[in-house]
Amino acid sequence: MQSQTRIPPPRSSGASLADWRPDRASPQPIYAQIAGYFRAKITGGDWPEGMKLPPQRELARQLGVNRSTVVAALGQLAELGLIEGRQGGGTRVAGKEDPPWTAGSWNDYVEEGTHYPNLPAIQAINRLEFQPELLRLGTGEPAPELLPGEEMRSILAELAREELPLPYEEPLGSLRLRRAVSAELGRIGIRAEPSSILILSGALQGIQLVSLGLLPKGAAVLLEKPSYLYSIHSFQSAGVKLHGLPMDKRGLVTEGLEDLAARAKAAVLYTIPSFHNPTGILMDAERRRELMERAAALGLPVLEDGAYQDLWLDAPPPLPLKALDGKGQVLHLGTLSKSASPGLRIGWVAGPEQVIRRLADIKMQTDYGASSLSQLAAAKWLEDGGHKRHTDALRLALRRRRDLMLELLERHFTELAEWSKPAGGFYVWLRLNKPLPLPKLFRAALAEGLLLNTGDLYDRADARHLRLSYAYASPSGLEQGIFKLAELVRRMDRLF
Image (cartoon, rainbow, N blue to C red; front, side, top):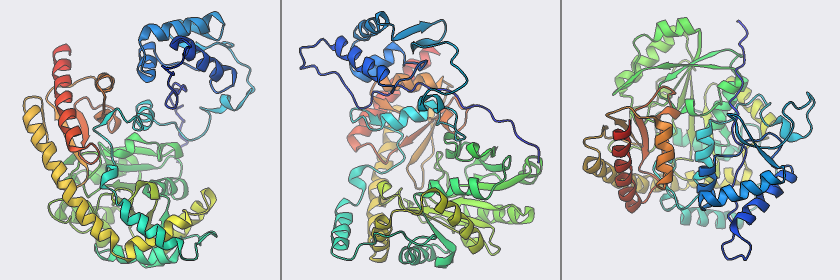
């Protein structure tokens, strides 16, 4: 296999103001507080030489002040020689233009690791999601009020009266939890013994372990386009290339799979057949059988992401691909993060024992196993029927929110966009009638207090889509947010 040239990751601003705001009750002028905070960051080494600061308008927004206040603070820092403006390069922490080849501090290694940084927009979203004043219209997790707080507290209180599992668990994870997961998988048609299940620190870790432990550098992965995997770098950081396949209303289009697999020399096919992220599409039963038949004929392994499997709203989805697998061809990922608790950090992967043992070995080299306490709580949650009771209630709540969002879109977006009714999951994939510069739409929405997930995160060429989530914002938040978003899209339509 030919060696691949590594494309260096894009550099991004390292300045983060998420944890600090000026004190308006202080007798010290606000611009002087800002200058003092920035000076401490620079002289303390948190903001190294050459680091680019955000634009003045963005700094003003993050700090909740007028732009003129930011200008005054930056002027004070410039007089001290701590920052400088560079032609075409914005404002940066002052330093040597050409640093020596040796590193002076850990800051010099920030961009040098083998793992790519997140896309700048994803980094921004990850920070901004913790600003309570923003309406989160794209967030891929249930709202706190939809999570089983009381039930989990009861389980943890009960476990506190027992002997706690403070030592490490075995490499595959807690046997008790694997037995509970095995029973849970059996309810959706997947036969997997505990010895064929590895407990993960969230399903995303399964993707990382596969990319690190099973795929050669330069390998090709086929997947739907758009896809959640384009918004993260789990495969790309391991030197793996992504090749997109088209979708229709029935899911991934299987025609042409053989040609693309041959051209790309594909090693794996990754798919989210149930309530796809970001489109919400549900692959029907016939398409699933077609996909499995074609993949089997090609000898193409399949990585099935079942993160949204439990979140059907109208009717249960068809059998997972793993339930159709009689040859050990499919690895199936599952998680509790989308339904019970993102913070519990419990997921799993089921597959052939030899493969699972290999992934377990890689996992032991990375984190030595998921939290023993989380595994015990998860086992109790599944064993006692808490998961079924909760998902039944969660479906009802999500169904109401989905129907509200569809009603709001009908009211405000009829002339602006088109969409389909999702049968499960969290997302409406909104297609704008007119292409727009989505990064500008993201920034404009942010200025209006709206946090969006734009389509270009999931397909770089996209200029028409928004991933809207009905799982996080409250009903009143959805009403306010969809109205404001429609007004913003109308304004941008006139500009572009």
